[in-house]
Structure formats: C-alpha cells, structure tokens
Image (cartoon, rainbow, N blue to C red; front, side, top):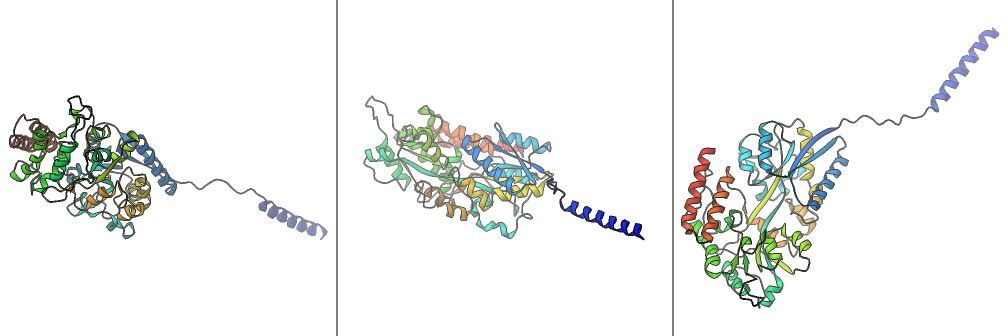
Length: 424
C-alpha cells in the first residue's frame, strides 16, 4: 500500500513538473512561411529623379503586398522593338509601359490582357479622364490604364514680352504671329537675329491639332495616311508661311539646340509650345528664367492641343496575372498615382488626384490640365512609324522651301501608304 501511494505521488509530481516546464518553454520566433511571387515590370529610361520616384512607389507597393516582389527593368534603347520581340518569343514582362501611339497595333494583336474582368466598382473607373481612358480601349474592352499624361501649352518668356511691350499672351494664332514679329530681335546689334519670336517643332505630333482645326484628318478608317487634302493643308500652311515669309519662327536645328525646351531656356525663342515635361527641366536647368504658360492660341477659332499618355498594360502570356493586376491597380489607384504625380513630373489621369494636388489652380500647369477636355489624343492608327516618319521628313522639306507644301504632303501620304500596304 505504501509503495502504491509513493508511486502515485511520484506520478503527480512528474505531471506537475511537466506542466510547469511547458509553461516556461520559449515561444517559437519563426515567422510563417510567405510564398513570394516575383513579377517583372518594364519601362523606358527617364531622368534619375523620375527613376528614384518610381522605385519609391514600387517599394511602397511591396510593403503593402508582402507576397509580391517587383523586378523593375529599364529598356534604354528601341523600347517598342524590344517589347514586340519579347511578346512574340513569350519572354515579355508581366506588366509594361505602353504609349498611346503604339497602343492600336498591340491591342489588335491579341497580346495584351483585357482588364475588364479585373476592374471592380471600388477601383472607381469613372474617376479617370474619359479621353485618356478611351485611348486604351479596343472593341469595347479596356487594355490599359493610363498612368499619367501631358497636353501642350504655350510657354512664354515674361521678360521678353515686357521688353517688347506685350502685356498678355496671344489667344489666337493670328495674335501669336503678330507677337512673334515683335519678339524677333537682334538684341546684340550685330546684324543677326538672336531671339526669335516663336520656336517651331515641325513634327506631326505637334501639328496634328492644326490639321484638325480645319476639319482635316490624319488617317482614314483603314489606318491609311490622309493628310494631303485641302483641310489639312490649311492648318499646315500657317506654319510654313510664318517660317518662310515672316522669319519670326525658328527650328531647334537652326539655332544649335536639341529641343524646343532648350531653345526656349537659352532665350533663342521667346515662345514655344511644350508639355508638362518642360516645367521641371526649365526650373532645374534655367533657374533664373522667368516664364509663364497659357493655353495654345486658337487656330481657325478653335481650341486645340495634343494629348500624350502612357498606360500600364498586362502581358496576356503572364503566368502571374492576379499579382500583375495588383501592381497595375496600385500604380493607377488613387494612393499610388498621388505619390507618382505629386512632384509634378507628370499629370494625374484621375480627376480626384488632380483635385487633391491642386493642378487646376497651379499657375504653370492649369493650362495643361485644361487641354485634356478638348485635345487630340496622339494616335495615328496601327502603323504609326510609317505615317509619322514620312510626314516629318516631307514637312521639314516644305518648310525649307525644297518643295511646295502640297507636293510634300502628297509624297508623304503616298510613301506612307505604300509602306503600310506591305505591313498590313
């Protein structure tokens, strides 16, 4: 009996010690395993400051989405050629930039994932500017969400205007031409013009709204070039006349600069038409330049400008579509877009974000924001290179007086359409 009692007491003590020991066991510090999915994002190169900003936005995304890692790749040269080659070879990134100019072709090739089924009501699709969103629609489906945009506005040198006795920027193209004459000067009195009134960029991307102002078109319903008609010529003739007859406008090559913005910053042109990208460049490179912006003067009594925009799109062959959508929806959502556009590198495509940032009241950006309501989206069908290259080459020839404007546009149109015929 005594032995049984001792055994029982021993058992109780053993159990008690076991329980006490369990209470003092160290807790496990091992975190639960998280399966990480890496998705690839590709874009083109930009300024170092812009690249740093994007990487910061991507870090924020990864913090909020710990199961997703973003590998960001910059394609420095021949961006679209590289993307197209990789799409064919099934090696394209999960998400990539797509410029509006290139969108019609890729959307028609069934290589981009339609986003309609991913977009839920809480994403607030109506918050996007309609003109920008429509740029990435094809056959009633949405193939891309615009990440930012810019229109064009008139940039003018305030000191040059004051010196010429001009108080306000021009509001019509006739006024611009008159002002340009007053602003064209030999300021050094050495017999050479060193300040032209207007800096012209003779590219279709900067001339299309003038063609539209007279009822002209850039392409027909079959994506063929269609700018050698009387309506288009009316819009372009004002450019040629100002350059050839009035000598109050100048091209970048005439004054040894690399861009219209640089021409303006160096004081070689008192007015230029540029986009939002010019603002940070001018402030950083020419900090003492006093400049202002205004909406582009009316052409043929019509407001006009160009709309340039870029979207995030999803590779249809992506193996990580849910994660790719998470990235796209964050970058084009209200939070991600506010951080991306908050420093002024680009304008937000969401109306709520633009309102939060106050760009409609911004003295330098309000003219650019206004243009989104009436601008011409920069798209010329499925074969943009054939159309833009031929136009640009022949239009410069006409400006230089090597052929008439009619001859130049007929040649550009014919050559573009012959090339398109081989591509279609």
